[in-house]
Image 1 (cartoon, protein in one colour):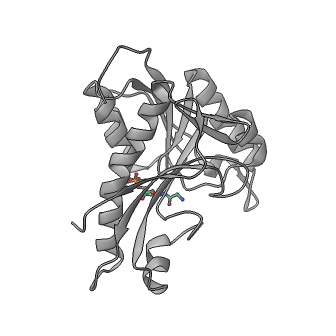
Image 2: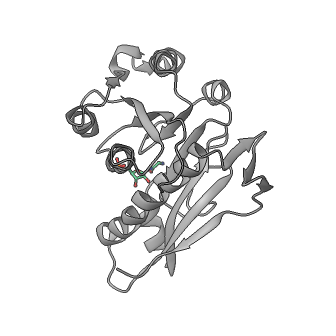
Length: 227
Ligand code: GAR
């Protein structure tokens, strides 16, 4: 992913947990292989382990605490998202990167960053939208599983898919072995898609993908080995 110098793309990376995808992107940036910089790592859980890992790399970290936005058991989602948007906008990012961010964003929040939010989802979309994708792939007897990087629209896990990595489901797989096989691919394809955006090769305009100036009619595919 090296090449001619380009202005680093400013990223706000949103996490909820471990943050291994965030760390894979951060390492590519810090190694100079990805023309981007993490302007902010924002978690919706103050105790998210990924926050400490990001801080130890010297990255700017912040969190919002959902408990502060809960009244009589009800979450003030608009208030929580306003706090998130304030932190994000202060970092002035070019791109919002959802990396294991486990909260459904409102249409208003998505519209505020239209065409500038990416997500990684652990399935071959449109198959297995939502949660527990590895369990569902195993229960369905899928021969193949994988991961998708897509732009975020108001429809949950429904925005245009840029790149998918496909992995086989092997005899004897359980959720842990399948998740690990998928996650190895996540750490390859997420930095790849961000690199295309950083180099001005990929855009999402009015919900339509353009790669190298031509419409991208179907998701690009990476087929991994059975390791
Ligand atoms: C990843 O597998 C990602 O695809 C998934 O959460 C995990 C986060 O891992 N995202 C979703 O399920 C979004 N619906 P990480 O915290 O180690 O990057």
